[in-house]
Length: 267
Ligand SMILES: O=P(O)(O)OC[C@H]1O[C@H](O[C@H]2O[C@H](CO)[C@@H](O)[C@H](O)[C@H]2O)[C@H](O)[C@@H](O)[C@@H]1O
Ligand SMILES: [Mg+2]
Image 1 (spheres, rainbow, N blue to C red):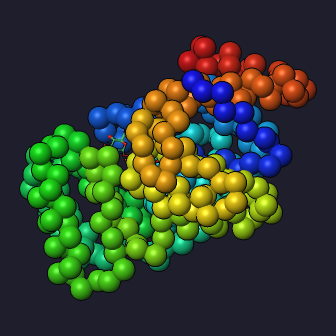
Image 2: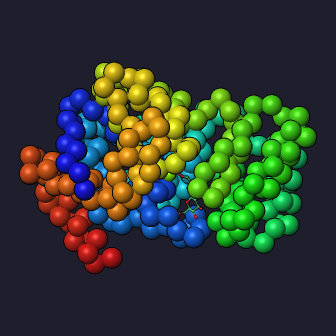
């Protein structure tokens, strides 16, 4: 783990979820969120004056299923959903669900190949092929053809980690970061985005457009990001170290955190 101390008064933090905070698992529902990670994120939210958000391809509903009570500021569906305030309302930045005819075709494709998994997230959809990795190129071709034949404009097939995401083209993780940066809690701060995937590149570019903004990648170089972390456990160790430093600086909240850590050990 690197020594990457950030200033709670002048930086803002954005985290991708899968592959960044959480280890990759065989299926979307197989991931688990270690309790100390929730405690650490809570503590960093405090340290950074509320200027922390999760920016994911998952839906906000799924983020809440995973992170429970945390209910952080979050963007879901690659910028398609925005929850600008912790625990607040979720706004749709992308208009509505995908057309029914496209959904029918996606379901047909998913059912016709062993190992494909369709994840309907509302304003975006993922077609996973982790269990059938050789299908990658042909699947992409088929998905692009479905979109083209539908006549629906403004949809994009975005490749991720053994997944294709079908989403509205006018939103992405970059537009999500820009929306958060307009909020009072974030404005004037230097944003740091931590992500692991091609789907994070729009956000990496968005933070680099802000003076002092930094893009940190996990596990590989992803220009314009710099590879900083080896894997998700490395990111979690950094969060824990930042949280410990904040705890030493501000011991008044120690009892609550210790309870969280104790519960984590019992879990
Ligand atoms: O933007 P992220 O927060 O990184 O989310 C990206 C996608 O993550 C999930 O899929 C990926 O992780 C799964 C669990 O480890 C893995 O099985 C799958 O192969 C990966 O593509 C999630 O299911 C998607 O909805 C997210 O868009
Ligand atoms: Mg990711």
